[in-house]
Image (tube, rainbow, N blue to C red; front, side, top):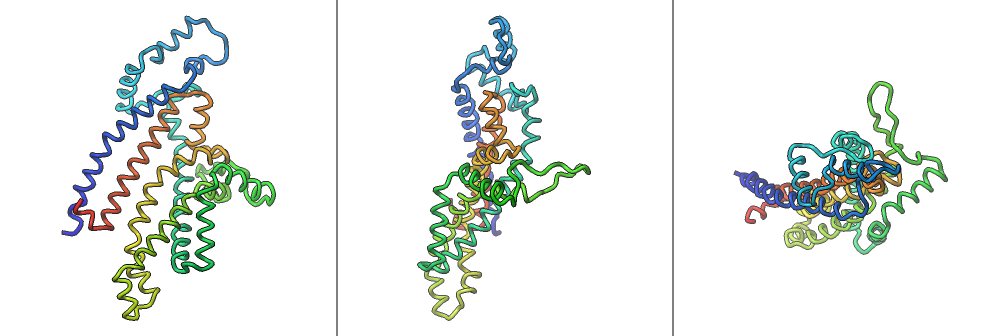
Length: 322
């Protein structure tokens, strides 16, 4: 039965991911512990307080324990679904993340869809017109995509389209309507989505171009041309299907990195997602929020890679032997 081996393949990938996720959790926690400053000062604010009061605050939040003891306590809370309490906002971290996560998902998914559509089309055009003007234009675009930082591109887009031309809003996201529905306002989404997706447009376009050119040089494509099959039919019937797995792999592997890249984009555009929340938590040394967001990003990268491996296996039967 075709694809009967996929459940076992998926189970193996998920099992491999478990120790990796645990390792990521420990590393994230240890890196946060190395950050400078005393988190107790965040809890008491900027007011001068007696050292005895500071000691009580540290004891209340477990900050007086050794790092291994704090790690064990953190893992115990984490496995119970407890991400702790924000030092600066005095709010449950999980509820805080649930408030911000929809905005980040809206931005990252929009950027991923935009990067996929534009990148694949650009790669197809570049491969079809190899060595000609469209190919050269695509190569320049990919070079710019790899060279321009998201935060700089975001600022330039704001200056051009919001300040100079006045076509789009400066930042933020769409206001909530009175009927309780959150509108999907493209005016607020266009600039941050373009800034976040530009680098990945270049990456996907380059992979699409190279994958198509590799398939086009294969013997079965050459044989089809010798039989007089049209280029458009070869593209639809052979090239795209065989060139898809590497492109899908690149798209899937980079979803987590788009999520990580949203930190600077959300900060530049004032987008109220977890990326901006991470920036705020770093500024205020809010360790529980920092740890939780880094955990979400890291686990998303791992799970996106696992899902990409499964999809790749569905498209490429040769992986059955691995």
